[in-house]
Image (cartoon, rainbow, N blue to C red):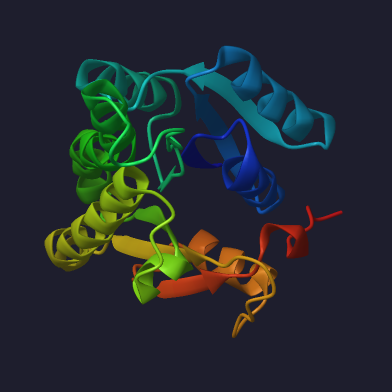
Length: 220
């Protein structure tokens, strides 16, 4: 069974992608900083006939991420796919927010991705197979920044994803940039096709657009 680690799996896109990848034969490690949210997603997958387990860890904590990845490897002997969805949405504007809120937002989005790359990539490289998925709101590419700290984190994540492609593609690993659409934005390919291409683990890195969340329905 292929193993997928999904951060921020307790809600939104993380929860949906966990369900969809489970339907495609992955065992899901549903990570979330809120234990109840991670357990809820895992239970939903198991109820639908899939395989999943919750894992509580803060992706901004390097030691916690390393321990999480090592536990997955110890238990399953492999890690095939990492989807980084964990994120923070600040409540105060640029001129009002405090230093902690800024640091926490950027740490979860950007440092979390860095921690995951360094923890998981070596095991994937040793097998010559695996993939990372980094999620970027499509409007950011057009300069539409919903919040300074969130936008800075996601813009940095985009740059990190490109750097990861350069570093990991020679080893046969794929790094996907998954652009999430909002509102009525069109998508060139269906949500199912996007997930099928990610799940293939064929070593081909792509930038893919996922339709609005309401257009994604768990498989039956």
